[in-house]
Image 1 (cartoon, rainbow, N blue to C red):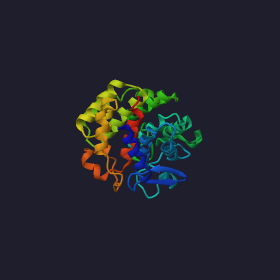
Image 2: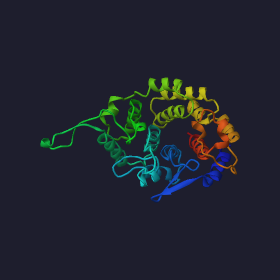
Image 3: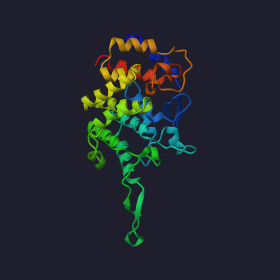
Image 4: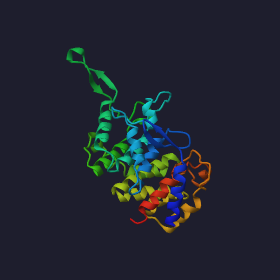
Length: 298
């Protein structure tokens, strides 16, 4: 079955939509680049041995010279002109996924953290007589200048996991909220809405798996996700932590025809994968297919 999965992925991937901005190619969902940072980050985790890591390069293409990440390389090029949302916490999960790869440079990480430190709103400015500048900054940190980008304690804890795994320097808030993504994530997985919110909890469990950290909490969250959405094969993989014959069989049964008209859904973030198959973007099945291939012999 592995050969069939490899053949299927190889057949559909060249047909799926991409964009190019500033000489950077990146995957898009349907005709939208609005979630490119998240999904290219996920795709970067399953790059097969010897393959060009273009999804990882796409994440770098989302970052400007000041260190801020955008939703896509295109949004960076146009500085988000015409769009209301620069970024969000789910896009940040894409950056964290990409940062697991050895190809993600420490400079990119440090530049991002520097931007986060310096971009907090100034609550009180210094008098000119004292040199001016900011005296007191807001305690709220943000990934970007919009409300959806406020950094939560869970996000700080997840950032620390990446920094620990890669050996990157730690920042104060990472230390402050160390391991906050344990019981809190279990509670959120039980109580959040099925759909993209639950999918983000699953990505947190995925990050723990890839970094070899907190197996207990990774499994707890994954098992909750799979219990709540039993037709989600990404959750099945996370809950079982293995590539079973049943997983491969169900993947091949569920996979849309290579001649399908691809839609605008990443089915693994939906409340029911089966009900959304007709709107699959295709990249969702490339991701899971490569995940299966990558972990089949681990």
